[in-house]
Image (cartoon, rainbow, N blue to C red):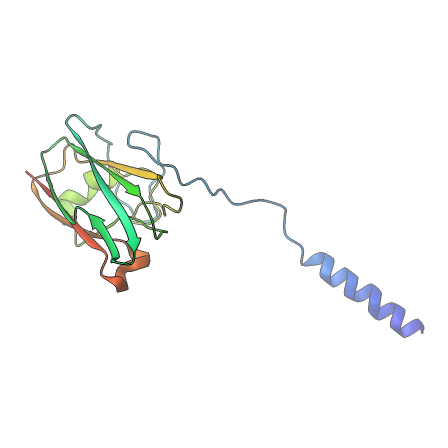
Length: 161
């Protein structure tokens, strides 16, 4: 009986030592252009430039027709911004791919609350939004994907004039 008591005490002590620190993770996914940001690891740093033109909207959709951005391809003027809106089928995000070094610094600076390099946070709930300014981003075509739905070919592009 004495042996069983010692085993019980040792087991309780071991389980107590494995307990968490009681801290909770920050789950805030709301992001807007112009807010203070901490660059993602490896992200280029620069000065964020506010939207000086039109704010355009791109919907993030997952339904019986598939996963997609609407519109898939959008053409904007330098200084415009884009607001991505999570409509359905989340989580969704926006991650730019194959961005030249001379553009990466400014685009990264204009992307608040990055999850990783040139990647927005995950938008989980309907009507959540993520905004990016394309002010000071040089003219060109910039391709992006939704990383959770990359296998579903959820891709889009932004052409800055």
